[in-house]
Length: 264
Image 1: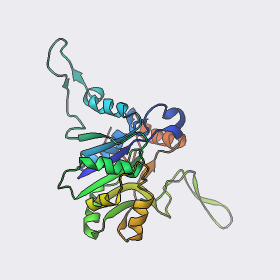
Image 2: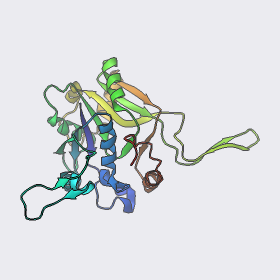
Image 3: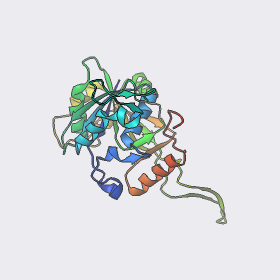
Image 4: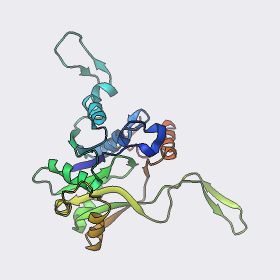
């Protein structure tokens, strides 16, 4: 199944961390958050990606065109016509990446419609996610859940991450437990990981201002065609400098729950 990743946004709200980079290219531990998302999906055997590009698409294209030689040991024979030899096993082996120009100013629904032009004729399902959120979700389970319920669309529901330390108090005001920046245990929000049946594309008009999160998803919900897959595990979206620093800290401390692919 192909995964569409929405990569057209700017990292303006990230301040100095974003700079002039597209938001999905903001680095966590020296590698773009987009790489982390793709590495997690690939670990669960989803390796066919359609990157829906917009702002500074050239940065994303250059990164992936040079990915093997940028991340791994390389042997180069100067003056020879042979390609550089990348040493050892390449983590990104077997990734198929289509980089689709979906417009600098297109909204999310338009990007999905335009990126979907690269689906194969026999693709009955496709996945969609954003280029700024990481999770330990096994997306294969969402796909199986989608096929089982038979509706047009599935959204992954997650608990919002805590922004501040969570206190558990006794009636007298004594602190029983202190949990620093937990996942909130109550309430659900969209985690931005979707599975769509191909027929959803019939609901996406060719409008650059179309936002996936408004009329298309709202109408699917009204029609009873949108089902939530509850994920109780880790999920985090980078939206502010504080979010960015929190992910950096988790990675630097070897406590990155989204790194399901194993030791770094």
